[in-house]
Length: 389
Image (cartoon, rainbow, N blue to C red; front, side, top):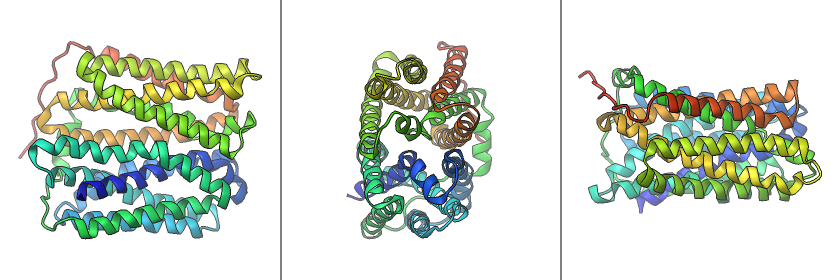
């Protein structure tokens, strides 16, 4: 039952991380700033997560995991409540940074705890249950949060997320035992893994994939509003993307087992790049039909982009199973670094060009990820990572 509450925490974190894409135009209008400026709420969150997560993990290495989860969720909830009360952009940025620190500490800790509280034969399912909280958030939490924001204002969405975090915290407070293992990797161990050539290549691919996706997804609502989508239609589009992401996540795991992780990752990157290019093509050359046709590229991006992710995880584990937890932690930081760069790049595209150009730029980044992925050689045998100590 404790693993269920970890999944609820992941659901709250996933909802907050992704729902912002549908709220940016509303936040920008309310705070009287430009949409590209509001987009830095995404970049600051992602950059804080990427940098803060490993630092906090190392700093709190010797503290009971239950206590760490309570600290992480407290920071996450406090950040959301601060966002509710924020009267200006600077305070909202601060709130997003606090949320990111809480989320960046909570997620890797939750995955480690899910393994610690489960029997050996159920550990894989426990990890899958926790990560399913993120996937379900894209299907249910994000459209719901966007809908609530359209009815009651964007601050109500942050209040909803704070409530979800509080529910998860209460469940974990009474459901988790004390004295859980403290096996977070040291800084030396992380650096040893990060110096491995195959790990560095994998992290570059993850950054380019995340960068390409968030160049467009950060400003998801901007081209849709230009097409005449109202809040309910944007929520529907987010639901389409979330459902596609859930399907892609399951499909990616299945294909990775049958076709191999590297082949599946290549297919996912190919489909995602195609979807992003199609996104711009539809907006530029089919303006009359784009109101309906745009849902096709959105669905394809969700399926293919998130089919890549479990395959990428599997390929990273193959590099050296004994160092996989450290490598996956670095991969999470790389993903959020890509999100941060993508949010900033998307803002630059909006400032200098047009919302219809977001897909071109994102597609080029994902295409670069595909080229790096293919260049590393599918037949190369990874060398083991030697960790000092």
